[in-house]
Length: 461
Length: 149
Image (cartoon, rainbow over all chains, first blue to last red):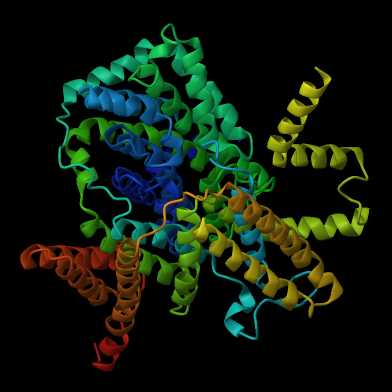
């Protein structure tokens, strides 16, 4: 155990792994700087690497990319008022006002230091999350059903007998719609021609600010780890809790939203601290806590590794290596950012005309590599892309789709097993399952239940 | 509102096809697909009702011009995506990516030297990054193969 822990600590610096580890950090930081490019998009394009490299190399590469994606994204939040990722959404509340005050460098310094040291609640209604999730499960059913032996939804096509390949589906849902959006000018990096003057001194002053608020930092760190371990919440939800906590405990809560350093520090600490906890849940239970981890789960499956309790026995060293990768990648990512921010910031002003075809080319390459060099995978990519684009534009949760698609098989297997062992009333015929069903229904219908309770209370009063 | 209703109709159609197709499976095989699809259809209906109820009569109508602009810009990038695939299919990744980026830049009225530089840079990055660095086997292309390269 201790040996695996120590090996895990140094493995990212092994000469056979180090280039991929550094490449993951570099690529993710570079792409993460672009506004509107989230960690999902980066992972979707990089996912095929898990197929061609050895598991240790490929997974270290992907985990390093995941870890620093939010760090790069914080810059876009501060500069453009557009979160690089949903986990940077809270940063813009105080980050952008600081940019408007001419303190962009300081704001970036706080964000970077908090990100490095540290490690959305979904808008709209629950239906916008549930519908894509069920659609993902439905699409995951295509192919041979291991339980009944039926070929399902293949419509006589031999290509679909093995099911839909993971990589073109992910790219079609996330990456290609983003290219279309960039190229069509709906979003894009070139939002302003005025590049703020960011000096190293300002950035350094921002990092010092993080140490001045060390107690808030520690509380945010603990919040991040806790939310990361809880399945299903992820950094997107945790940042808002951290932001609210920072506001509640501040001596000047009324100044939040106008450029308070704590408003950047708390969410940026949480979003990076979440990654470690989130990864731990994914590795040990095989249940991804967020869409980013669902992507990683997909990468594990592509590499022939099944995350779950067996990871501790079969791949202990790999598990520790990946957890250490998160820690090291954050430290290295922030050092790189601190040194190069004043220069890299110009990347964020690249025109969509330049970016769109480059990402499109990467998507085409990733589709080919990630689907066993099969050109027919492009049919899946182009067929899925309009669906992904519609979901993106109509604010349906594409992360839920990924969760549904990756976990669909597991969900069906568990359903069939429960049905066989406990009968058709399995959701309610034992105390544990009844409690879990109740919790699930409460979560799904929380808004309606809240309304009902309020109405009841009014009537009683 | 109309776009969302249209999207939900597409989902409902997909769900209906799934229900119909699943009826030919064995009883054990159709259980889970039916369960998922019926819930999906129910939620789609619920969301459609919500969307329709939320819609206000004063909702601004999309002008013909903006619709045309939307179709033009989105159609263009969809066409470029398809063109990218065909260029890769014909000339392989390295040349295909070069041609895709060059064509796109020229169409976007970038200056020729800049367009050439971007395209060449990306072509070289594809070669050195993927083929040499990551040792990926990249597709060579139909024309390249026929020419015997």
